[in-house]
Image 1 (cartoon, rainbow, N blue to C red):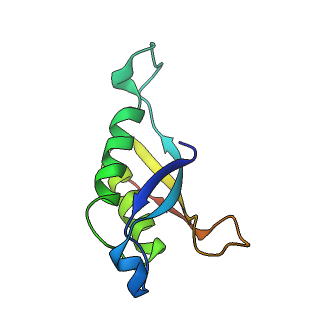
Image 2: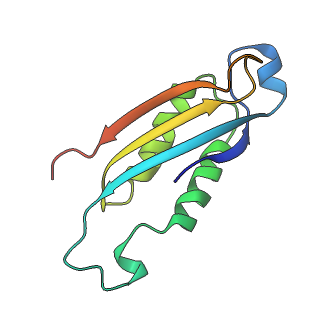
Amino acid sequence: MRDLVLPCRIGIHQHERVADQRIRINLDLDFRTEGPLEDDLDSVVCYSELVTSIRHVVGAGHVNLAETLAERIATTCLEDARVRSVRVKIEKLEVFPEAESVGVEIERKRPQD
């Protein structure tokens, strides 16, 4: 998933606690399949459900750190047993006028089955 932009209450400063700011989210998922995909939605991760889950995580309330939000999104993605690993990139888009964004990228893997 690339360049999902959502409003978010994120940051440690007082002004960040009282107003939404735009964040950009990018995800890379590695998932396992049992044999050929057969052009069947049930055999893959549904992007629509994934975006809905991410919107829920982002909208759940204020978070201080981009790292915390990235961890929560990674945990949500790993709830799908087919997802073996996830890379989450969170960018705050409105922090410095001279920078396009600031943020963090994490990668989490499912423990070996």
